[in-house]
Image (tube, rainbow, N blue to C red; front, side, top):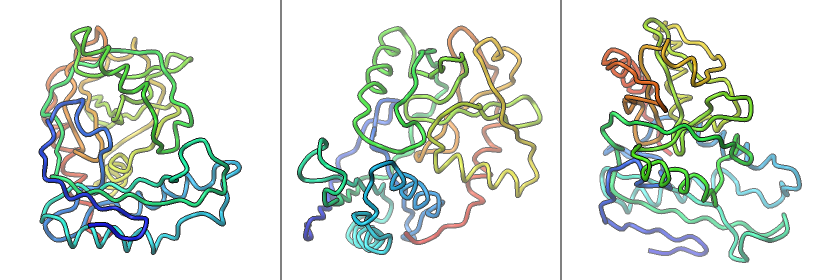
Length: 264
């Protein structure tokens, strides 16, 4: 189905559930036509509009985007992944006042790899890490190099030696009593936002601190998360191995499931 300037792809092709699948992960919509953390998704879209030289006159109204998302939900399967990409038909290298368009795509609900994953440590800092954007070939490059080296995916360290995030994931750690989040420049994922909010409501201790590869042996568990899932167990980062931490992963899932469903 295609509307003016807005395409909907309801392909039912199943994507492989590996760490390399679904690079353009989207909002996961339940059989009730609702999803968790819609407010985080909208807040993140507004953060991109505040970039220098970005014309506010050309910003897409939230109501317009939400109408398109709802139309896609109505025409898609009961459980689905929903992805909205803002672009210009003139291409990437255009003036800031180019007219934006929206591509909304639906696909099968995706839940990510089961894990546990082994992550290579890669020195890399994303451009504009706090902004969700496309064209990040480096993430795919580093993931594939990691797989060639016998790992499942890659985790990034910045110029200060701090772990920040993984290719398409946020990182979370466990010290036995508290959830520990890395302090570094990164994309604050929507699932990460949901989990942190609900951990607070559940009264679970959490903190943010610099984490370097040398600190990893002191930790009792590790996980990655994104819009697929609030927790994929990580068995190792670089040369550091982590014990199984079922209580930690169950806690992350419990926090995520506590977030209420909201219509897009």
